Length: 246
Image 1 (cartoon, helix red, strand yellow):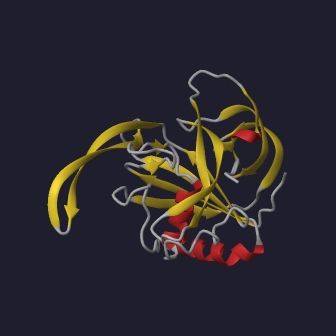
Image 2 (tube, one colour):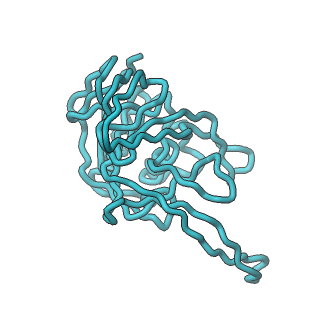
Image 3 (cartoon, rainbow, N blue to C red):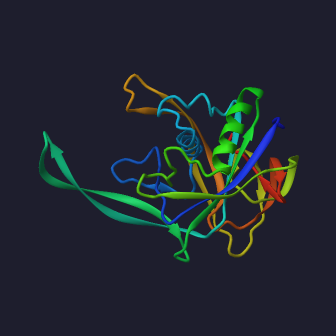
């Protein structure tokens, strides 16, 4: 079903490393290849300097749409992280945790193309404010690829002039909801990934803990290649066919 898109912005998000922790992983911090919708909403809130637990409704799927395209081939690798336990100001012993880190296969920068759409009049002022911040490189508290040590950059920002709804498309460049996939065409070199990715969160009584309220299975190509097949509820902007998390 077509969603109203009042305005659409696009920008490139890049960095050396990323770690987007899977919400269902336990002691080992496994990572998604792509930033989840919740991570991108948090990044937008950081740019606008909105408090940690105050942005969930502002960037709700009801008022804005978010999409991601991979622009560089990606890989993941497990690393062992050593931590020192600090109890009552005294360092007691070290503990070890496995952390999965995403990087570019060629050793360069990870690059994503991010899209943010205003789907409701109530979101337009936030959209305009965010656009001004990004265009002027006023990034508020700063932006990161999942964890604070993985500093990110934004460039190639622009407002998309026209957006065309496609009830059906024979290709897709971005992520795609699994329920919007009719069929795939098998091609050499295509690596399709599917994962359960969170879309929305709420704060709990313990303000340090957030709760995922909804997730969906999302499909994407690991190396950023165009995927051929049949896809529903897509949009064409800047010559690319994209699907949204929502």
